[in-house]
Image (cartoon, rainbow, N blue to C red; front, side):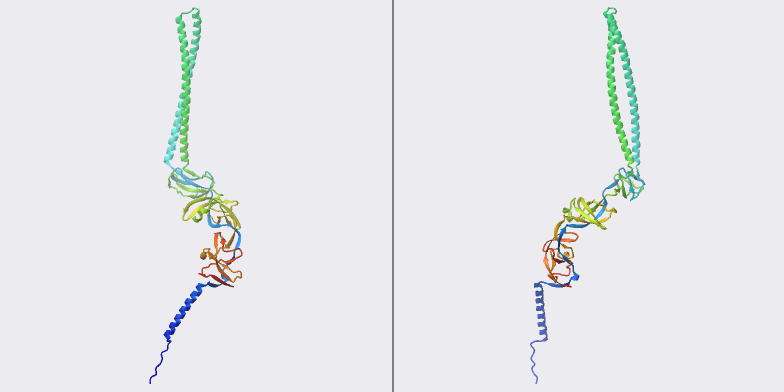
Length: 417
């Protein structure tokens, strides 16, 4: 006889379903528990950096690379074009003012010089002939004046004698009038000759002045042409070092072409290219410093170039006080550029925490050193070593400054050694 077997209320399948539901509920409850309360993470103190919050002198600075450049540079521009015939020096040569650098040739310019010289020599010869003729004419006029005065003197003598004889009835009226007319004739002729002499003198003065001006003009033109030909030899404008020379023998160089650069030695400046973000905060007078070995050197901003290229702009800085003795053109210096005056401030050392927090919060270590809690802070300016703290911390507090990359949303750190 068969026996009826009662079916169990909890089958294997049903049990597994119930366990799955319980596990899901437990998971959800755990998630709610962990997300609803402060999250904590254990970490060892030897894996993090704990720094003190301090109060002291603070100055906002930014690190920048500066390039050493000559304070004064002279560009070598070809004033008169021509063919390069000879190079006297090469790049890097130490030059004295007036030393030749290269020689050009320009046939047209040299021909113009010969023509101008011929014109000047011809003018000088013509002027000499004119002066000789003028002197001869003056001599002739003076000779004529002498003859007239001699004849006038004789006519005056006869006239005065005849005047007495006529008064004594010794001669007739006709003879007296004849001698009187002859006397008046030479007298008038003397007056006319005086006017001729005066006009000759004025004419000679005007002609001499005109000739002198013409001679000066032509001589100036000749001097200019001589200078143009002289400029075919390019010379050093000052004492310095030839840092570039871009011209080869046989090359035709047009007038105005820049062929090189000469740097004045011993006088340097430092050119820095800060980010455009700082453009409105950098102006002449701001100071900077850099260190070589154990020595620190001071700089001051002298000029700001406001043109922005590739998100950067240029500033020129000059040395204040002592200058490194071994500076070289093109040398790079690590400069700290001060954007503010020194002032008293609360500070925390810079560290990797800033990359994750943006300076909005930080882990503050408890007084007993057993835990660190997340606190909100406000950071102001910064320099190469410190952040300025505006709120959220006080001097003597300890904070974790190392990277927070693995902490996620952790609110509290449990510290252990």
